Amino acid sequence: MSLLKPFSKLPELNTANILLVENEEQFQQILAETIVLLKKNVNVNVRLARSLPLPIENEKFRPRIDLVVFIINLTSELSYQSAEVSLKFLDPDYFLGKVCFLVTNARNASVPPERLISVRKLVASLHCPLLFAEDQMTDGVNTAAHRLLAILKVTSGHVPMATGLYLSSLTRCTVPSDIDQQNFD
Image (cartoon, rainbow, N blue to C red; front, side, top):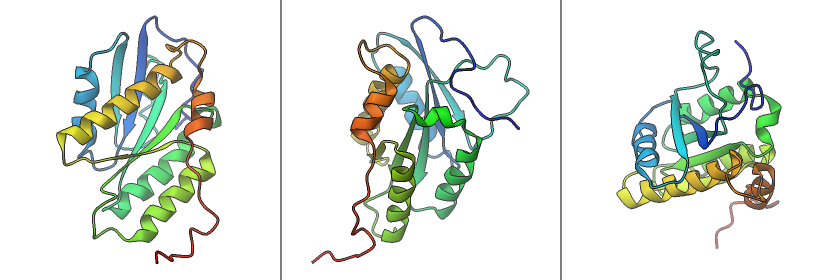
């Protein structure tokens, strides 16, 4: 099992590759189809994975992955744990602006607040962007797809004068120092 490395392969002309990682694959397929259907000026290839590491058999033919998106469903503890374990199989260079987290079901009343806090702490410790998506509505899926496509264009080098590291520094998740004190008066 090898680490997924961002710069081990050369980029393809007018092409951007995104890897969507979700353990339960509920939202992943819908989001992938929406991203592919969006109007864009670059060819976007969407790869799907339940978790990392990726199989070693096809590594030779696998294109360079420009953005890794971890989709975390807050109603499932297994979804968070799977993302956390998968992080170990990413080369540290990916955390220089090529990793993003997408959270679903954040408004669900049955989700314990501690789960969202633990996700925010994990994402903040990695200095990555954290996006929220409404996976039950078409508009929510479209909005998430547009946001990911905008980030993907930057991370794949298709936006002049912008880099993934610069974008990540502008959009990274931060955790307030008083987040452990649940005082919502």
